[in-house]
Image 1 (cartoon, rainbow, N blue to C red):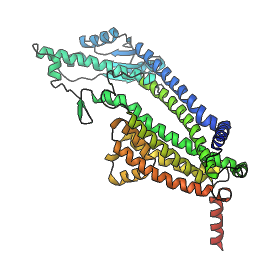
Image 2 (cartoon, one colour):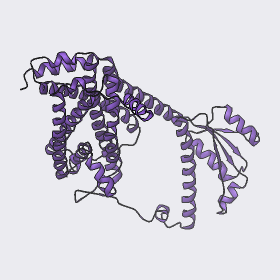
Image 3 (cartoon, rainbow, N blue to C red):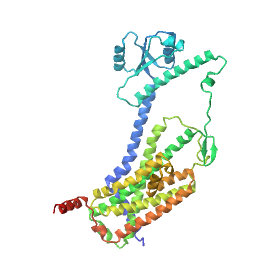
Image 4 (cartoon, rainbow, N blue to C red):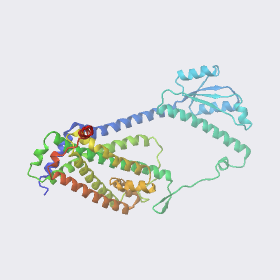
Length: 437
């Protein structure tokens, strides 16, 4: 029944890779675009770090009191370059800071030290220069706020210590120490929730995106494969070969799967490098062993995920091939298959952002009715251990896949594959002519 299948698969893969639009758009662009973007992010982050080490601000000290002097000394000890502009009025100081390479302007108002000493509320005016935005500029601005906040906390601790010399200021200001742990699969685990979520976020974000891209790539490739042969008039020759049409269908689907997997891997590797450009600059949470707390994928969960993904790939390819039969060229096939990407995008967004079972019941039913939601849910099952959900999804996917495969096989088994056409423009024109008559 599958005599000549390997030859058809090799032919399909060669033709798909030979097409420069597929090679560039699906494999090379994701593999190159994300590393370049990641390099740009890393360069911007490094520039921001360097700017944090060499912050320079203008200070207009209208108070000249002891607390104001302590503030300037505090900033100096933290390697902040202080430029005094006491000899300028406010407008001149603003203009000077804008034209120079200074980060901002701090105005210490008259009575600042007196108010602090007497326990009265006072103000500190901070002006940040905007020169077009960017990571480095934003980081420098936030660093000034953090330094001034640190100085304020020091004053608060000093006041508390003066009022309660026998007490620990930290205990008075923060009398409650929270110990946060996580419940995983019915067991209490001594891990902070933020550390656990930080360790899991790349997997919870990457898996749905990878599955969505794999399905989109596969559908686009399958549609392109049939439509290009119809456009180049080679489909008739292929159908006259001494092999069954079901073998041709299987070969086209398998070839599309192979190229789609390569494209998806290129996309995922590039996306991981891009995300690591951000994650590498964040403080790492150490000591989170996913395997020790039962969140690492098990062989059974990976098997279920693979089965669900395989079913979704087969159904997506059969659906794309069935639709591409009604197109005369590649552009028409892409137009017919394009709207189906919504069946991947919506499940991907919901599985990334929330628990699908926590959604309103009508919306949950709609998402579960979409077959391509289930492989994304199966990716979460790999970490939660809810095998029943994955099995039910696989059964549902199998039924849907059999129906779609049957439709695709029926189309391939008749001459409709050569004669079927769907032209919305002509349909609209005929309807208009009918209305006029």
